[in-house]
Image 1 (spheres, rainbow, N blue to C red):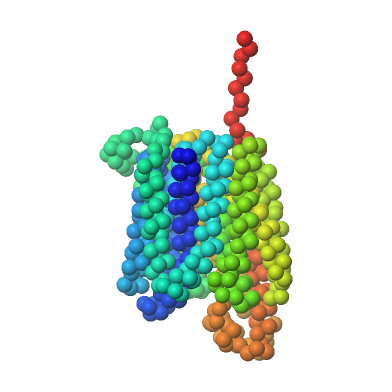
Image 2 (image 1 turned 180 degrees about the vertical axis):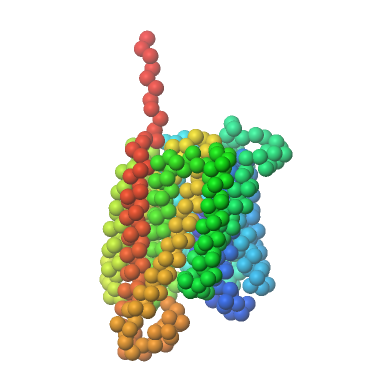
Length: 505
């Protein structure tokens, strides 16, 4: 019963975290109308992402030094504070600050949940628990637009943020009364506070944060606010590379006390798991984002209905994630599941690139299910491989590392996908709709172009949109094929402990 309460609490926290990342998309038009802040749209997502990724690797060191329970509740509290600031925001700038605070809090929630599961469950049971956690929490990505659309339409956009408050309070309430074991290597909390700076690698953090921020800003601004070959974007990439090189030098110098220990990254299992998670996350988030655009732009449905149409993917993914967790716990081996999962995801993503404006319901449901089965089978396996290959004291750092690769992979490929989609659309419009005003269609956006083209030109524009989205699915197929290659290095290892032979009498 205690294990189920802990699992329910950490799953709930991860659910509202992922819900928060997608629910804001439907609220942005109302927010920009109220604050007259159209130029700030990019910052509503970027502020969260910058704060989240900059702090992510440090959270592993914090979890390894202090009680996982109280650190988790601290990060959850910061996330809730950010949500409250967003909900009561009186200006666009206040909303951006709230998003940054929420990003800081969110940086320690997913890896904290995985760390708590590792502390409370033996290795044999973790596949089931992690499968349930990842499967259910990822529902938040899909139902975010549904909930956001409903509360924005019938109440106020502020409830997109207020909704996190009671949910977070329930999670914190459960955790407050539950004992979560502390690893033997952790010192009492009073001694930990007294020696706060020992072993946290603050210098590494101060070197890493600007590198991450410059890199993510370059991705955010490139092709949007500035051209990719502009001095600003190139300067940000160069600055990020320089800062990251200095960061790596420092990490190498201080050895095992580093924020990202080289001894851990040099392990083949660690490296392969991180790369596999990087490209699987890239496939998941990019596919989810552009499936919604396909249904809204090409099929002409509402954001609410688009969220419903994506459910075959996420429900199949959730079902297989839980099933695979149960079977890995019984059989012991995770490698066949990630190999099969990445292969199946590649097949599903490739098939999804064949979507057209007239694809039948059976096709778009069936291809989503294939892709969902693959991701459900593979996504949790890099986490299990990492936990199985490191010492218990290293689990928090390992989890922060793999979640960082997950977030960076998603961010990087969303940027690549945006460039691929935009260039594909600009190329396809003159071919399929030669008489259309290309700039007018692009400026109108995915949900507004129908208002600026005639009925005679609309079929051609829909074909152009469909082809541009197909190019994005080529990209996601390529990403998961790299994951398929990388995952072979995760090792043919069993998570089961070898049985000890009893001496004969």
